[in-house]
Length: 149
Image (tube, rainbow, N blue to C red; front, top):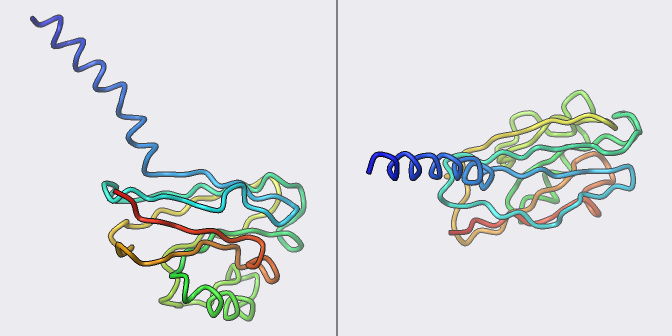
């Protein structure tokens, strides 16, 4: 009996990393102004969700920097425009912009960064967009974020 219980506990512990992985995603960006995905699903069962951004290119942040920014779909264009004026020192994000739900820092080739946000900041039925706010990148570098069961 104890042996069966120990096996059950061990198997249960093995499943923990798989569950934790459901609350994070790795997104790659490259020197061709592309993310490797255009859709991210966030489980409502997660308290927090982490986006790991990896710049797989080689160009420096000043000429081909990338970040990952999350907004409501309706806010994306205005946030990107405001961010362009905020400059590289602000990661092309207008300081204090409440329309930004989450964002990473701006990174160059070979670098990585992460951002974690509370899932309860997302509303069921709302459309969300992630994008790169480096000037000129938000058009080709964007995708959807969906809240799922």
